[in-house]
Picture (tube, rainbow over the protein chains, first blue to last red):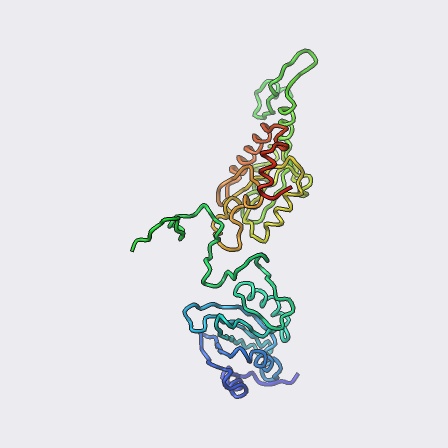
Amino acid sequence: MTTTDKPTIDFIVESLKAKFGDAITDVEQQYDFTVIIIDKKNIIDIFRFLYDDERFQFRFLTTLCGIHYPAFEKPFAVMYQLHSLVFNIRLRFKSFTTKDDLKFDSLTQIFSGANWMERETFDFYGFIFNGHPNLKRILNVEEMDYFPMRKEYPVEDQTRYDKDDTMFGREPAGYKKLT
Amino acid sequence: MKDLQNNSSDIKVVDALPSYQGPGFMATSLDKAIGLARKNSIWPLPFATSCCGIEFMATMASTYDFARFGSERLSFSPRQADLLMVMGTIAKKMGPVLRQVYEQMAEPRWVLSVGACACSGGIFDSYPVLQGIDHIIPVDVYVPGCPPRPEQILQGVMNIQQLIGNESLRRRNSPEYKALLASYGIE
């Protein structure tokens, strides 16, 4: 392995912008963590570049998950965290989309560890990962017919019958809200 | 033995059944005799998934000593168990497993639901948790509490013992019982 100096975050961001241009929509600083907003069309190219390039070597996918921001113009996002074990740098990526277009390219061709994480993201949010070898529910029962972490679904189980008063956020039949 | 006979000991043995006795014989009802034997030799199957299971461990240990009630021997095979003790949160994904365990038990079988989660879902009023095991299997006795203390679990078992002792031998063949199982889709 060639020994190179630890790159700065700014250098990484500049390299990404130079190589991918418009695919890097935004760069935010959330506390001490750099968040790079990317276009979902270029996810594979960007991660492959960061993986292969000897100057960065982001070869560990720490985590990946879906997010639902109901108030946003593009309410659905997938978040990725990469770790360069050699240089000990962590980066977070987010890619936003609308409800009509929940298809993402699967990261399993780069990181095998993405397999179960993408299944979980599909399970809870309904993202479709193109090229995933086995995209089915992983944590919830297979008969489940909705995506429970989306905000439009109630968190409470609808088969419960012993808690139907207003104290528990449920309205009994015929209940009128005070205005 | 002498102590037992003159009733000056704390140790209790079960009372004799109401019977008709004469020299060299004793006549009683078969229901009662079998009930007496069954209720004092329950083999429980602990199905412990969370904190209520920890309370059950205390119930089994020396201070509370579950074995005093004739349940010295836990059965970890459902095929040999009489009493299914469900202790803890049952996730929906665990539901079919619990049901299969119940189906593997031989008749007569009883179910004790220990703790708020097993009885109703408890605080886990959310999408992954089964809102009470009585959605999938019939339950004989419910023990409330979060978690219940060992005394409460013992009380639940004693209630089960009462049910067992008073159960008619014909109950498991009755149309009501068959209808109950059918309502759960169990053969």
